[in-house]
Figure 1 (tube, rainbow, N blue to C red):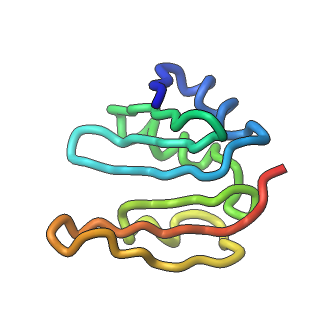
Figure 2: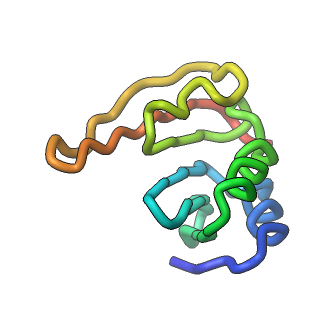
Length: 105
């Protein structure tokens, strides 16, 4: 895993041809954006909720890349997905993952 410190670098990484999925993980203090590329999982930590919302809107559309959200209330905040399904990871943590299928390129 690698950490990215600049939003611009994260957006360039998310638009790469080998980027397969983007996941957003929200906690009380930080929003983590994770992009899975062929070799590494890149993570950007955003501490400002307004910047996190702007970054989320700047990501490639769901029909271009698999897109996961670990907060089900955020499901319909973005444009329509090609298809989606729910994965329940753990009953104790109440974390859900929404996977949007598509092809990037």
